Image 1 (cartoon, rainbow, N blue to C red):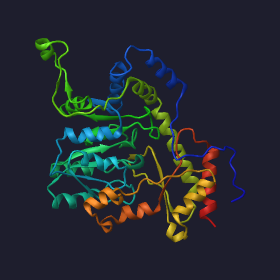
Image 2: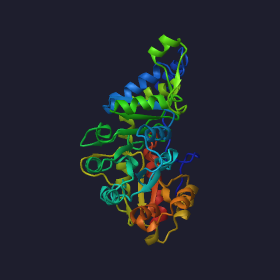
Image 3: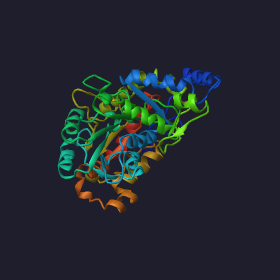
Image 4: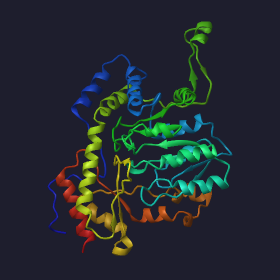
Length: 392
């Protein structure tokens, strides 16, 4: 591997934000406004999100996790209820159910799209009437099988939450409003490794007025300010109707989101370009599986999940990571199956054998670097480095 050299001393990360000068200008402008929280930029960002998603309502919140938590509360999920989700996701997709006292259950993934498998969902819904909601993750940017999921929703009376944090800008049948079309609630994250960023932040998108109005109250400590009450009792009067949270997102964050959203198509086009380059450069490497894009689906590539048959190659995954790191490339694994974490393992005693696809996927998957500023030179270097280890 001595011939592999890269000029930059900086590690190539699996993901990172890109900030344009226009973003800096917009944020600076927001700092000069009268209100830097609960001001006009929050409303504007929410309006822009609704326009993008084709939704009636959008609500900016402090994180994707906050969005999921509030979603559980707006659906009145609590003790005695069950929530189903994919084990191949970040912990927040399951933790949100635990926050409200509901139980969590997992369903294995599809072997091609790596999203939750509707056929396996139905077998669970038939047996367990306690399942009231499903948190569906559009993994890596590939939409789940939403038509099948909508059929199950109507057949069994469950609610659907689209954990869309990987898939901002993805499409189904060339429509980017698929998310809000099929799900009761769509949640977003604007963490720096996502398609656009607000620093930290998230959003709830829905067409349901009741869900939106309750979410808005929960975002702000459960406080309600009604004109009628203030007219009768005083301008200062407010009341706490629900046990809410401080899940607000500031105008500073929202101003960055407003500016970044303008560049979303540019971000997605670059990610798809990088994915295409990886596909081309790695297509002849044996014992790997490239990401799949189902016909009629538009993958936005938050992640580039590459599967490597380490067992057949007789290479230890840990050693492979270390070798790539020494060559200046920081990879990641998305994700350790949620049921493997001590909290869920100890509480639910989940049997690993029930998740053969997820287990195999976890053993094989790595996330290659994919972000806007990743150059052609770095893409080539990543592929050459990978080949130097795998193709001996």
